[in-house]
Image: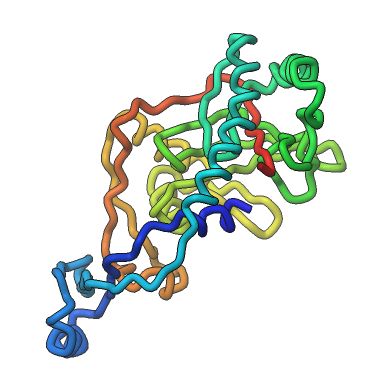
Length: 267
């Protein structure tokens, strides 16, 4: 539903980027499109990024999008107000989710359901209800929580998850987002800090390395990572052979000191 809502408030497209390898193809492209090319620059060692003027042919409905956004704020603020009255912190929020203390959820449910008896109960997967955002294959969402969280900025976070499967076995996995940087890039960078692999079935991740990576970012260090590291598909980014700077936002980053859970809504 977020995707559909986002389509109603798209910004106008005034330019687009085109990537060419540094060879005759780049020179030919420049010769054929010099009227609409605004600028070009090197990206990595073997690619060139061209920024071109673009005629906007899009369609948008900001009047509808603003109504959806306004309603989503109302739904989120009901829960936030209850948490404020309970003096409980919110470590991270997004459009339709928030990361809160796991232990506060029973009290939050009781207060919310008492304060808003005309609304559906807080816990559920229907419209205007909230449920756990965490998922680990083979585990129930109620048995998954974040034992450590690192929050760098907007859509830049790492959760170290602990889950219990149907055989009552404790598992460790992760949930991560870093807008503008690929998962493969972060995994490759993490392996340079700690190459220990954490396996989950046939999948694996450098969870210890990811934690060290985010700790470095929280301490204000700027890191450089390959957007498309060796061994990965070469069609993710045309300028994959170059490096991309990973830097934190100006807002102070935070960490969650104890067991937390991310809850989201189908607003």
